[in-house]
Length: 338
Image 1: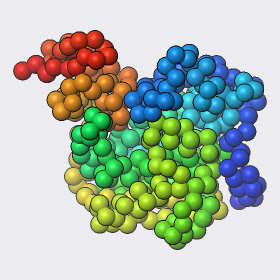
Image 2 (image 1 turned 45 degrees about the vertical axis):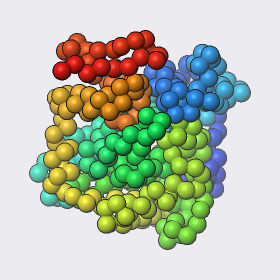
Image 3 (image 1 turned 90 degrees about the vertical axis):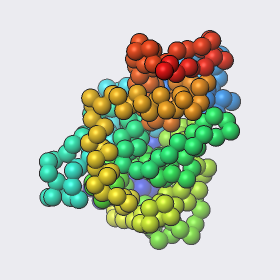
Image 4 (image 1 turned 180 degrees about the horizontal axis):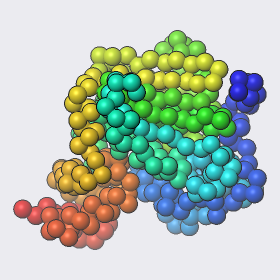
């Protein structure tokens, strides 16, 4: 495995940019593309290209290459699960919440384990929704009606998670894992850090293992500009009083985020079970109360929910008579009913 890793590191930053043999536009998950375009429409309109159909859009953003094929990065980001597994049989971002400080002390093996998702984009949305339950993530309304989270623990984790996705060695036999324990969040990747961990604090360097993946996250402004994401990750210490730790060997890289609270964070996670729809509805109602003309894609970004889940919540709130839509889809606003 170490020899294989050395060979892959020899093409660091290039392997995921190679064409996937036999791939084409039909290997992409159109629901993922639609969700991604919603983010672009709200946060980077210049790249949303609303007049283009999905295939034209994907060619414009180089998701589909000029040859008509996909690169491995594009396939991992937006591909249909069967197509991703045909090309990379070991793909899986394994997210688990463990009720204890370790596997040995856990009262049960886990309280939540994420089902296998279609691709990186779908995994990102669901995992960010889950992580919101374990850290402080205050909603602060900004002048552009978008929520600002630049000073929150969640923002640090989002930057860390994007880097996690962009630096993973998806060609390895292992797969990326995220474990949420009572006292820490551990993100572990196959593949070594390109720099020694001690150099992170002193150098500005953008050298992702998977350049196309980090670019696709930066388009909708879900990641910092090249080389500066590490600053956001390191601000974890200022917010929690506990420093992020970095470890790496030839095969595995690990980043650990110590949690400021244990009991409270676990309780938040347990209270967010699959049947806790009322809390989700209250989150959406609170956001609508603060910004009545907010759009559903914007709600999805603020809550960490998928756009499909937001659609279901909005439909439920309307059916219960809790909210009413005033005006058209564009230019209208929501009204909360007493």
